[in-house]
Image 1 (cartoon, rainbow, N blue to C red):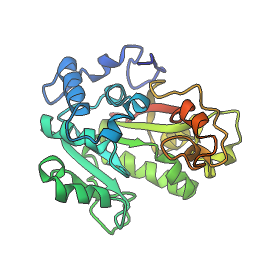
Image 2 (cartoon, helix red, strand yellow):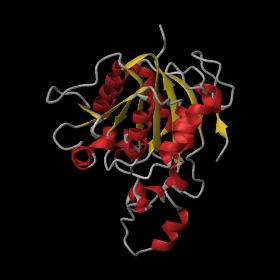
Image 3 (cartoon, rainbow, N blue to C red):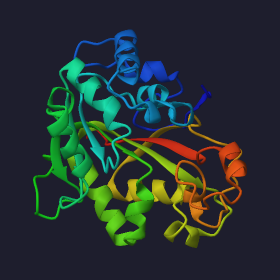
Length: 276
């Protein structure tokens, strides 16, 4: 596990270990119990072997602990895609009596989760489905209902739709959260010295860009971590971030080189909706 790097924020005294960030647990779970619950969810037998093999790149237990996710929380996972984190968040919510929303474009973004609900209702049946960004085609996450909203490697997808669409996404996230609620973002990191135009096509985003979108919506940066950093990533590939595993879009060309680099360099940012 890499050490946490925290920044000062007016919303909390954050120059503390990550474990201290999870001590306010309305569900009755102290830090040790929360850590145990997250570890149990990561170890769930219902996770696919292929997804478990990627834990060494994605550090799910450390990431969820850093975001302060607790078993009894109402958690929104935005754009779950293939459900990599859903495999962990669903048993975590079930074990702790929490609520999990999966929120994505209504017409096609939730197909995998719907399939799982049909195939394994005991594991995934309780997940609530919502449209995000909300456009009136499906149910939305109720305003002020979420303790945590999480998104993993997705802000670049919103950015492909333009700056206005990205700004609207952050506004909707802000509305979902309770005062004091957390927005946790893991995203492919574009170095600040590189051309910002790469955000529109490479899959990488600058830290400064994400912070700007979040702060414009009303969020305060509460902390950041190098849990998911990868210093081997040079951020400059023919097919953007998808050149690296797991996509490996170059096929057999330089395959071993990209496998040796591993998955992308990622920033892990924690934002808070001010309590007042």
